[in-house]
Amino acid sequence: MTHAPASASRPLTVGRPAAPLSGVIRVPGDKSISHRALMFAALARGETTIYHLLEGEDVLRTAAAMRALGAQVEQQGEVWVVSGPGVGQLSEPDDVLDMGNSGTAARLLSGILASHGIASVMTGDASLRRRPMKRVTDPLAATGATFIAREGGRLPLAIRGQANPPALDYRLPVASAQVKSAVLLAGLNATGTTRVEEPVPTRDHTENMLRYFGATVEVESTPEGGRIIRLEGRPDLVAPGEGLFVPADPSSAAFPLVAALLVPGSAITLTDVGLNPLRTGLFTTLMEMGAQVDVVEKASSGGELVGDLHVRASTLQGVEVPAARAPSMIDEYPVLAVAAAHAHGVSRFCGLEELRVKESDRLSATVAMLRENGVRAEIEGDDLVVYGTGGAIPGGGLVTTHMDHRLAMSASVMGLVARQPVRIDDTAFIDTSFPGYLALMNQLGAGFAQ
Ligand code: S3P
Image (cartoon, rainbow, N blue to C red; front, side):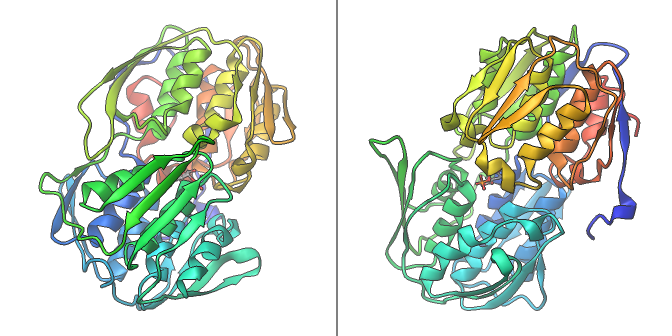
């Protein structure tokens, strides 16, 4: 696996499909849960079988890193089987760990590396090397681990870990599940109770999955609406006998979901979608806009709710999304912006400062995508304001995706409903989170050129 060099870019032009979208699909496994599944299985006793692991490039980077740290990670047909050396037992990697495009892989892994008595170096692609790591190295330095990073706390990052770290007590300054998880993962090899306080609840897959592997994790709500998480150190993590089922990723489901809402006459079903309440802000928002989506919940799996979404094309109205909802839909704003551009009336999405430090500066890139295609959009402070066209997105623009998979997929959805085709500079990075995106959308009738 290599970085996608500029010469390997895959441009795409998207126009309106010949017919409404229809069909039943399962989008690939949840990216957040897939990273955690590989990491936690490597830290548990016994062999964990993982079903529906996302086989996107980001997660394959985590698989390679866990192998380099001494875990056995094997793909066996449809499933992945992982057995690990266990908490505190990882071995020193003999080369640089390359996390590719993945902030989640780099940040969560730094919690593991800081709490093992080994030296390691992490790097990533040009996008990841621009992203802030200080948000994890600052709290993790209290373990006694040392970090040497580039200016601004950027990768490559050298870590000399601590074999006997103390338990940390940390209040998150930003709403970030990655930072929360890095601190909790360091706490796995600490004696005593690690305590993390988050001002706003963020996705709790780490807490859910650690419990599923047998750790004691307590969660308390604060009067201000936040949460306090306590993890008992040195738990006996055990591979779950029934294996681990990864739900379909709600952040990937977002693209066919919005496409089916916007392309007139469409009706599709998305199966087994993760419905963790800290991930469903987009569904709530679209329903407030008038989306016709029926959610049929199924049995939960591995501590996570799942369900099927039945989606029908709908006329959407503009909406105001409060800042407090941002963590539950942080990855979904670019495609929500496309829905808002198609809707009637003005939309305002509040409190989007975290969007500036994603795979690209998604706030600026989303505005540029819309303006380039004739849609009025403004950044006001940390808010994004989109002026809906009432179903008449002009299109005809060239979208620059800045190595960002979600911008590429959002632009492709816009192309399906724009008056003139939308050109996308590069769709290669879609493989980081949604391998097979173009083919799966074509099963619904998107008619993407491949
Ligand atoms: C993730 C958390 C979010 C999200 C990212 C995955 C995770 O990042 O944007 O795609 O798996 O914990 P932050 O926690 O930095 O907001």
